[in-house]
Length: 223
Image 1 (cartoon, helix red, strand yellow):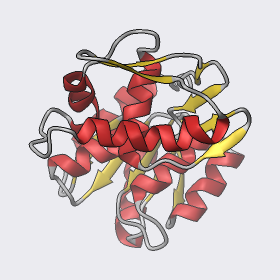
Image 2: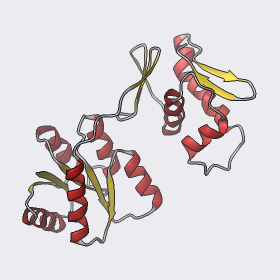
Image 3: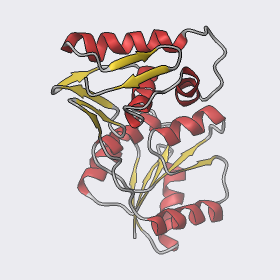
Image 4: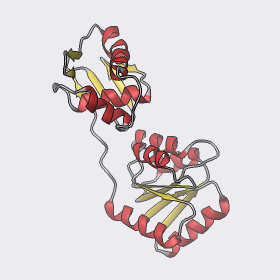
């Protein structure tokens, strides 16, 4: 079993490498996000331990880049942050597990063992409706081969509509999906984002795939 440890604190990184080796793993160490991405492309790892705070990049961004680059090794995100928002962001970026510092080494080793037993995850399927394609892993959107730039919230709304295409999706369901049900802002917020999406995925391509179903919600069609 081969594990990559990505930790910028040299002393802690060396301790992690030593403890994992004592537990029977072949281990490589990296001190930056760039080094981690380079190593993951050259070697297949059974697990990756990734620190959230790195000198050249946020660990969440590194995780996204690893997944977008086709690295699907099980990933444990390691960080001093323990807020719910950080945990959710890490898991949404593609992490498989989350461990906050300070931690006990027996727990970290147990989590790594659990990840290596799980094996590499399959890459999420690309969603397609007509000539509109959404890649949930790389967080990219294309229409007719052209790349479309969306904000994180626009992407969340579109992804949910893509996963439920040809069905009527209510505004309440979209709020639950894109705002985690915690939104208490303007009642027309969904309409605003649907309008923005139409300006990006429909009008420039002469399509009408985002359909308003009066009194019910929205439906995404091939267009």
